[in-house]
Length: 157
Ligand SMILES: Cc1cc2nc3c(=O)[nH]c(=O)nc-3n(C[C@H](O)[C@H](O)[C@H](O)COP(=O)(O)O)c2cc1C
Image 1 (cartoon, helix red, strand yellow):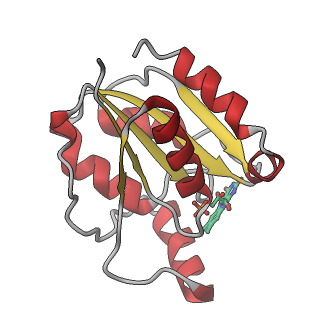
Image 2: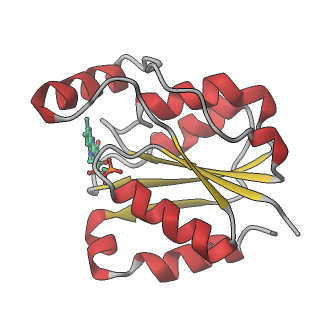
């Protein structure tokens, strides 16, 4: 059986909800990317925009699970200024050499989704087995469940 790790960063909980639903649907383990410094409030928002535009690497806490112990790692991020979040960039940078097969998903409001997932593939140095974009409106309407099912079906687990 394919061992799956779902790794996500979430500032306000939407990506976490999607990650939990994916892990539950495929029986995978979950790992949250955590930061030592809060990113909430207006200043946290502005810092996030700047880090995204500059493609900075955020400071992140050590992970509990090793991606090298898995057959497939599914990486999830919110879209920030059309790009992946800086904590996700830091995770990929740290574990790039240990990543097995990868798939990506992102949470977004609905603008500029085009760059985030290709940039994740470039950062990992490999193509995604599958990709998924979930808008907050789809999450609120419960439409993410069917999309997650299609996403997982398209990956040979
Ligand atoms: C700094 C920042 C930049 C954002 N930029 C975009 C964007 O370019 N396009 C978009 O559709 N949503 C954008 N969003 C909205 C988030 O992608 C969206 O709210 C996402 O669901 C948040 O996920 P989270 O709750 O897991 O943090 C941005 C949010 C933040 C905080």
